[in-house]
Length: 494
Picture 1: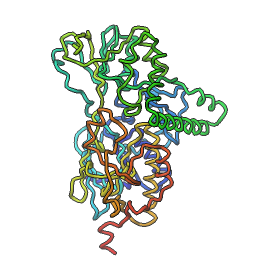
Picture 2: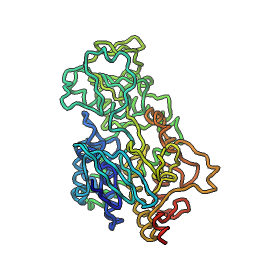
Picture 3: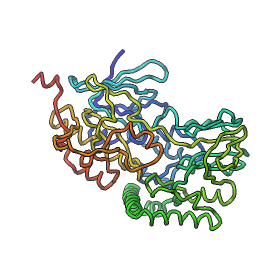
Picture 4: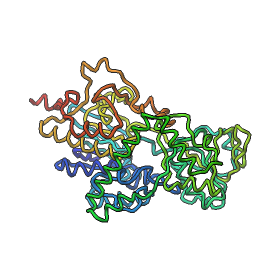
């Protein structure tokens, strides 16, 4: 079996992988690269999720690429529009020629002797393929594509209707004139309910506890106005800067004054739904704003569905499924023909790939994250993890740029290996969860799988765009922590 070698292997052809490919072409153009994608198409999340109403949960001027203007009227875009944008991007920049579909990467083994990764992939149509590379860029996202998270649902086998998870939405699901119960209170549930409500007999969002919700327009009037008088790239850059600044300011204010933020958010929901709606029960969380992600409701569509009676919200716990629906602990019964379990994702580390370094398996939970993208004692590896409090792509762009800085420095210094290593002064460093910003269920369930972070740079994952910009764009690449060395083979040769 032949083994193909490239300088850089990018794993995943979603937003992060496509962005990484662009930066490689432009900022480190002498490097050869390939993208390995396990699925049959690009897009990642936006190809996987096919449920009604699937859309971005942040504006496309920040979720879109830094280098590719988003020119559509709607700033909150649906899945097909995002896929069209991605297809335009890979065609425009020739990235499509570098993608290999149907390659499910299962193992990556590093050798310090040759300064290479050997990557093994299972082919969807059977067989396997092996690649080697000098640098590995993991852009495979943070959740499992195999299946979503479904909690124990007592009696679900008794239910005579259909149970569907949004991550495996059947193309032929007919919910017209059906009674639908959507279990969950996150972004997926709040997208599904108003999308299904006009067609279904009735849609009920069943939640154990409320989530903070913010309504906003799906159209950015300022962005659309700027495009009429300025070149696309200029208008886009201004809008991106405006929206990024707004996101960061609002996040900081809400974290600094959580009680005031809570009153503001809940108060807006109360105004939208009117004085007769029980906002305290259904839209007043017990936690502080941004302990979990806020949910965006474009144009208040969820509120409109509730007000016109096509949808409702029930805050209660499931006692058991019955043949005809769900019995709640309060004694109420929800009749249902279809139950949608919008109950979350299964988080994974680095695409569920088995990593080995010089014969030793890597347990990422025992590592410390370097700048939130690389890991202690793991050479020539980058992993893209975006923001939990802003658009994912903002951080993905910064990481892709920094990887190119790393690669160019290695070229300039003739050092083929870069490895983050703890200094003697870091021995007393306090460590904690890499994702200490969120208390969401899907984060807590996977906390033990993820790397740690430290209490000082560069062993931190600040989740702060301003800090990250300084760290990724301005800080020295050779910082005394990222160690640049020759291969064992190279050392012997000298």
